[in-house]
Image 1 (cartoon, rainbow, N blue to C red):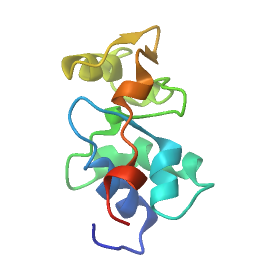
Image 2 (cartoon, helix red, strand yellow; image 1 turned 180 degrees about the vertical axis):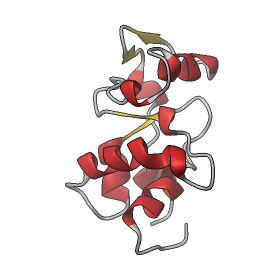
Image 3 (tube, one colour; image 1 turned 30 degrees about the vertical axis):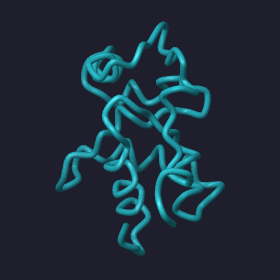
Image 4 (spheres, rainbow, N blue to C red; image 1 turned 90 degrees about the vertical axis):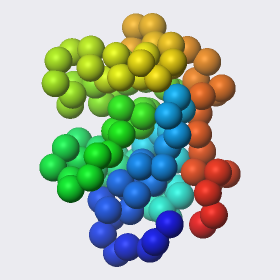
Amino acid sequence: MAKSSDFFERVYQVAELVPHGRVTSYGAIARYIGSARGARMVGWAMNKCSGWHRFVPAHRVVNSKGLLTGKHHFSGGETMKELLQNEGIEVVENQIINFEKVFWDPTKELEI
């Protein structure tokens, strides 16, 4: 992954790499890009990604417990859940079932 000085761009570069059918967390992305305490800022970036010049699969980024805390940023109340379910991820009451199984950790999956 190319290094960028723009925080949001670095977040989007990692989010774009989350595989279909997998999810990561705000904190995992923050740690990977060297901003271990920046989970909230990653959340802000995900909130703003609809204006990005490329598609960013923000639906694949959830909180550290597998909760769909960003769902209110998607059009319609169930869009995030539906996108995840279309990828085979089971979601019940805004909680990803088998979160540990579908969790994708960029620090383990990508070269730093």
